[in-house]
Image 1 (cartoon, rainbow, N blue to C red):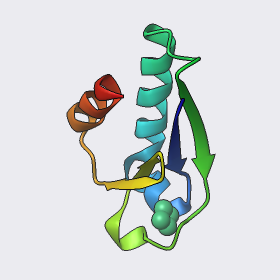
Image 2 (image 1 turned 135 degrees about the vertical axis):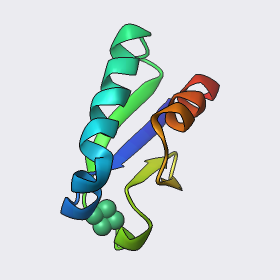
Image 3 (image 1 turned 180 degrees about the vertical axis):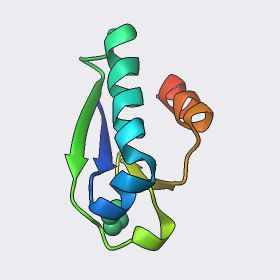
Image 4 (image 1 turned 45 degrees about the vertical axis):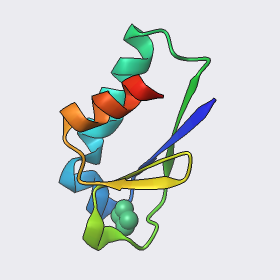
Amino acid sequence: MAVIKVCLGSSCYVRGNDKTLALIDDYIQKNRKEHSLELIGCRCSDACQDGPNVFIDNKKYSKLTPEELLKILEEL
Ligand code: FES
């Protein structure tokens, strides 16, 4: 199971991770991926300057567009 951590620190949150969280949750629901993708929030990881940040299996992705994020989700 892939683990997706969305940074919910204030910097990442206001710079787009509120929408990222909703997008991933929507993707999981629509594609019935509850058993293969785990979505969790995390606190600031002291990489705010790169953000908004998402961690997928502990690899950091920064400033992803919705299209880039959906492509990664499809590949998981
Ligand atoms: S708020 Fe996300 S890395 Fe700091």
